[in-house]
Structures are given as C-alpha cells and as structure tokens.
Length: 235
Image 1: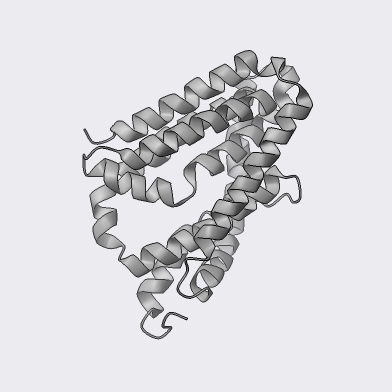
Image 2: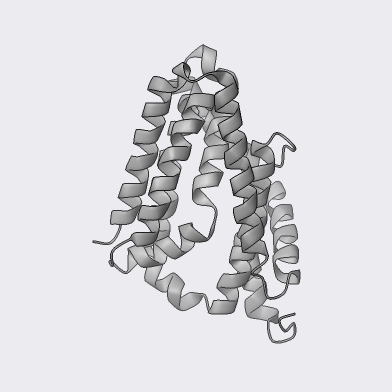
C-alpha cells in the first residue's frame, strides 16, 4: 500500500516521543545529555559517509552555498522556529518554552533530511514493502524518545513534519525515481550529508548552524548536476 512506510514512521516518532515524555524524567540528566552526544556523533558519521560518496564535491559545495543564500533570503529557519513558537503557544507548558522550538526544529531536520527520506519515498510511492522506511522508523523512534526526554513535547511535534514531508515525497515517489538519474541522486545525497553534518555539530553543542537555511541546497544541487554534469566530470 503506497504511504504505509510514512504512516509507520510517523507512528514510531509519536510513540517514541510519548515514551520519552512519560519516562524521560526518570533518566538522569547526565545520561540524557550523553546519549544525545552519541546520537550527534553517529549523525556526524552518517553525514561524512554520504559526503564521501560524491563524484565531484563542487556540486554539493556550490549547491549548498547557493541554497543557503536562498534559504536565508526566504528566512526558512526563522519560519520553522516561528512554526515551533506557534505550536508552543498552543500546546506547551510555560516550563517547556525555552526548549520547545529547538526540539521541534532539531528533530524535524534529523528525521526529514538524508538519503533514507528520498529513497524511502521512492520505494513507498511504488507500493512495494517499505523496507527503508521501516528501518528509518526504528531509528527515528529511538531518537524521538531521547529527544522528547531532553527537549520535551516539541520533539513529538516533529511527527507532523515527518508525515507531511515524507507523505508529500511519497506521492511523487515514482516521479522522483524517473526525474533523478544516478548522478543527480549521488550529489543530492552528498549535499544532504553536509546538512546531516550540521545537525550532528548542533547536537554536540559545537555550533548553532541555521539548519532550515540549508534545505534549498537539496534542490539546487541536483539542478546543477542536470545543467553542468557534462562539463564537470567526476573526480
């Protein structure tokens, strides 16, 4: 059934987040912080792995640079935080106010950026067994549990982002498979690897990269490949 993988992923994020909200307070703060750091390190490893698969680093570099300029002009990060603030005002207790938007944005980016999101959407859209989204769902469910225990209810609302982002991509899954050739997918995933690296650095508390501003780069990069791949061969 097309869309089954998206539903499974959404449910696991919700269940993991609810469990984290319900039982997370019983986990010592130092343990929760350390686990988030482990997730950050793992996220860095995933990002590096994706970047190293590039055939020509110029494409993800230029694509992400141009995309970031577009993201800043469109104020995507501010709009994401604005959405987080809107949700916070309606659903969060005052004691959670400082963490709500951060948890929402960090979890949304972590769950919705990366090769599994795109590849899983293609598989899910074709109506075959959504193995990739089932794997992703198991990982996201655990991370949602940890995020909810650290950031509170804001992390749970990332399930809404998962549903809409992956659901939209799934609707066009078969078209994505036809639209993106292998080279475009490779360079787009490398660009996504840079975004995943940024997520990992933020989770480790080393930087405060404006993650939302990076999103247009995931669209710009494959467009650059389509336009200039013949003039810039693989390295």
